[in-house]
Image (cartoon, rainbow, N blue to C red; front, top):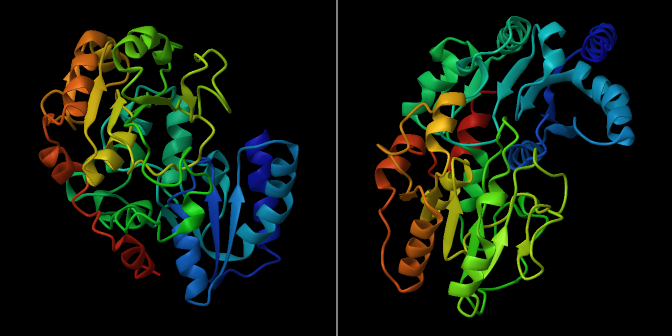
Length: 356
């Protein structure tokens, strides 16, 4: 009822407002806005009128969505999205361009209609996707995966690149500064190497942070490296309450710049895309690989096309960290990068704007 009410109010308001090509809404169902902000900046630089509307949040955010958000959506000629938006299934978008930018690069773990969804949820996703006029993706090789996940014809899935990677590929000071409103805990390169553990969310409720042996890490690297932990937004809205006091909690940071890292430890998170693109060593801690493959699954086998070292045990992870800190090279991710990120060359924003 909540979603249908939103769509009803939008459709009523649409009768009062005429959509104009110069007006755009950057709608953020996902709080990771790093793909929307550079597009909004470029839109404004070209003389367009654009507004960012957040979907998730407290009462004030919801009130703004149901008032100002609906008003702007009704008058927009272009709607950019960074995730699925349930009311879109019932919204009349005739004469508008609806461009899905998604919030991550590549096609690693399955999502959307590639998963065994309940019939009603699958039907809603197909109705939403039917409103898309284009889906921007990060590589030619991932087009089929996105077409399957959204249930759209592959012809509208375009390998235009990812706007957020345009900034990542710039010199160390980000080109689009609003992408990184929060810095890491240092302004320049750290005195000791920084290691980041950034696992993804598990739908089965498993807590991947609980599988990280903090005391073993401290015993081996406490004097030679600093550890940061960043959890998935679905796991916690802010700081992680159970981290040891010596671990730096980066869970509340939005769109962090990982270029200072010595090594990234992840599992199946799309943050590995950033690391591979920037040449940061990647360690995949895949303690639940068999179960995750059965429950969620991958578009490409992580072991056949890895972003770096793949470790099933924490002891293997520690050995790989030690190798990196000693100056040794981990398995490189060139093939992974070529498969998932071939269109990420710093020109995504311009190519996406050329659609309009």
